[in-house]
Structure formats: C-alpha cells, structure tokens
Length: 166
Image (tube, rainbow, N blue to C red; front, side, top):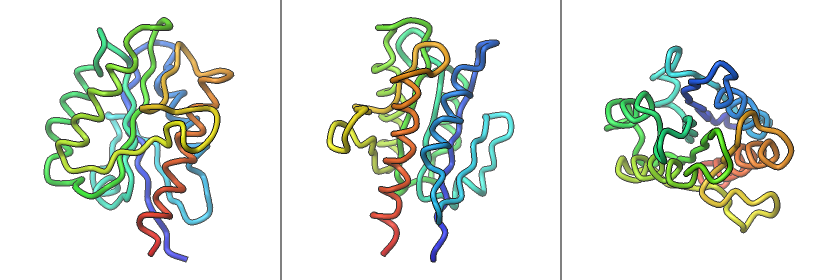
C-alpha cells in the first residue's frame, strides 16, 4: 500500500495553546492506515516533509478577523513554488464565538489558492459535524468544536486517498 503524507502546520499564541490543541484533534482525524501525518509548529516545521506531503492543513489563532502574522509570513514565504496541486485546508482558534473565525479561515484559504492548492473541507457534503470552510474553535476544542477538528482531519485523509491513490 502506498503511503501518503499530511502536514499539519500551526502557530499557537496563547498560554492555553488552543491552536495546538486543535492541531492534535485534526491529527486524530487524519490517523489512518496509509497516512503518515506530522503536526508541526512553525518553530519546528519540516519543509522537506511539507514539500513531500499530499495535503497541508494550516492552523492559526484569529487576529482581528485574519490569521496571525506568523502564519501570514509563512504563507507568503514558504508556500511559494512548493505546494501547487496539493490538497489544502485550514483551522482557526478564536477567543469568543462570532469572533471573525470564518474571515480568518478565508485568509489562509486565499493564500493556499494563490499558490495553486486544491482546497477541501468536506463542507456539508460529508455529514455532521459540518466543517463549512474548515474548523473553528472557541478556546480549547471541546464538544462540537473538537468533533469538527477531528472531522476535518478525517475528510482530508479520505480525500488524499481519493485524489492521490490512483
């Protein structure tokens, strides 16, 4: 069986490490036979593994309705020339409900599209919980927020098999 790679790359700002906790929930969903998945903070990110990955899932805290500057810098500098044709997805942590998480997701998705990535979340087509544009969590992921993170990981892993398994 061919092995596929998924990179989960994130920056976590708060002392509570909410975005990191989300990344670990996404990892849980990606954990399937035939998938080699790594969770990497920006501080420990492995560019070679990312370039070899079929999918890249990027997570950030929400800063005023966009991703944090650390992720923005990563999107602007590290994706260029390295990710065209790969599957992309995103997740966002925010401090309060209605805090602009959808806008922040779209800032990551826009960069992924600009660099030629294929964007997928599963949306409402793959059952509940719905992932719409990606996963958003208020504070540490619990209940439905946690389920959305796990579901996003599952959706991406299954789509990797579908797109790249032939």
